[in-house]
Image (cartoon, rainbow over the protein chains, first blue to last red):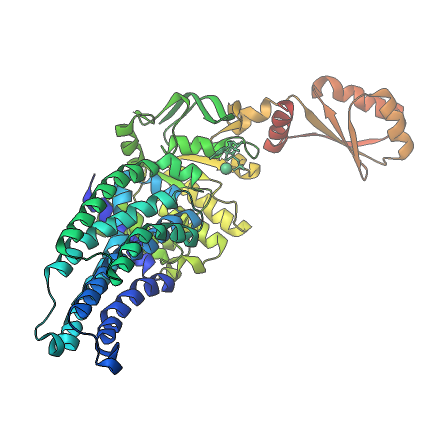
Length: 245
Length: 306
Ligand SMILES: Nc1ncnc2c1ncn2[C@@H]1O[C@H](COP(=O)(O)OP(=O)(O)OP(=O)(O)O)[C@@H](O)[C@H]1O
Ligand SMILES: [Mg+2]
């Protein structure tokens, strides 16, 4: 495994992806809404009744932070399915596989390409989100809520783990799909359990405290490890070349 | 350079290639001919270590295709022009080649030099910054050819490289292939174009799941058991032809005042045929022994195995 080879594949893939308008929209829109739109919600929601207050506000801010996890599970899926199914559609796998790269270098390269742009967009967005949210809520809370342990765990631990999950899942799904949109739709199923947790937290059924988050992280990590083996198994040159096309 | 022994590939119940045994010498243009579904692409894919073999073995410059460690060495020294061009349509021509150059660890300076040289030779240099997706089929085919050469491989596998080209571009590519041969490269060429094979290949193998025949174009032509004799008459009237058909059993084709007669042994049969024509009142003006083309050989061989 040579990281340099994986990086060559990754830069090529990112170059291709960043020329697809649809791919750009899909990584920019979500971070934009969460980063700028939601702090405004914090400011103006329920304004006629004096706005959100106290624990209510904190619950919502935690739930909003959790959205970064949802983003991390869904955005890389879009790119991963593009870069995997895209090779199938352009029939570019044959010359690529004939070059001196190993399957794992290719897989790593494609994973990096699906990881970096969404991660960059989400991290940038999170900085804006934290700053704006503090600005909007400081007067009501009397202190700056962000940064805190909750969003710290989400951004630094859960977002990378979830992005890896999303990419591995896409690899497995893409090996069966011949259309990137179909692969994306199936890829997005992985978001459902997290969306359920999000809804549960919004309605206050569970509390997204650090313990809960660490438990969820551990679960994602375990699934990551399982999917790692499944995805590398489904990404083997003969399979890819003869069944993917 | 390439040694293939009893190479077999099965896809489930389908046997794509069976018991192939042949050698390709260094610096040779080796033509691989066969009808659709004969297993040409499958063979090339096995030799390029893209798919595994079911049984048998092949060696490229001494490296075995079935060994994982060897396959990486093989891939470093070969270039492949696949049957589908497989370009990145959103990348420019230059970016496509540059990516492959990097992948093959071709150093920056040489990479740029090669890209410029090959794009210029194939008449694509002016369009180097245009999206590959905006290219015509023929231009894409040429770009795929350039891509297979950026890392200066010793051996080239080409799967129908002139299939989409107009006659002029096809000639450019053929001349280009001959130029590569001059540089000492070994070329394995899959093709359906018999005329092309006859013109540029040193040796030709005819395949239909199994290897049917192998030899130089001349050897293959000489191996032909059916020949054609062309006889130009003063006049090829209906009556003459029908009385001729009664005396000689050979297949006769008439076009204008020419007869083309299938013969197996021209030296023996031609005098009899001419005698028959003369006695039927015909007047022979010219007798030509038609030189069989590779197409004749090919069609006969492929028909025989049906
Ligand atoms: N991935 C695959 N799965 C199943 N069967 C396959 C596969 N690839 C090839 N075959 C079968 O193997 C046989 C040989 O196919 P191949 O593509 O090698 O032929 P070919 O000589 O290249 O034909 P063409 O002239 O049409 O390109 C065919 O019967 C084909 O159906
Ligand atoms: Mg073929």
